[in-house]
Structures are given as C-alpha cells and as structure tokens.
Image 1 (cartoon, rainbow, N blue to C red):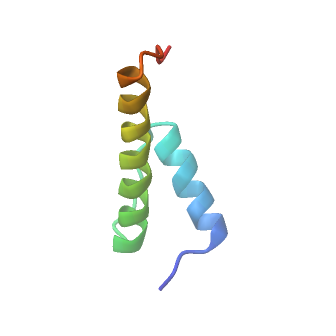
Image 2 (cartoon, helix red, strand yellow):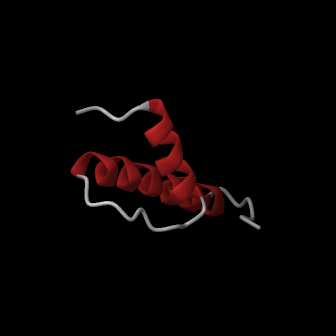
Length: 54
C-alpha cells in the first residue's frame, strides 16, 4: 500500500525535526529511513566541501 501525500508530509516533518516516527508500518519506516539517510548524506557533503554546517 502506498503512502498518501499527507502521511509522507508528516513523516518528512518528523524526520526533519529528529522526532521518532511512532509507527511500526514497514512502508512508513522505509520512507522515514530514506529521508534520514538523505539528510545525513547532505550534512556530510557540506562539511567535506568546506562549508560550515552551522
């Protein structure tokens, strides 16, 4: 079952604010982990290029 745009937005906000998801749904967990990994990669890339993250 695919996620609704509303649910995707709620998961994105939770991932962006470093909140826990609070759900055991595998689709939601996969989407949450995908966003968290992408955000972690962006943080590493900025530091590597010499741009301070702060």
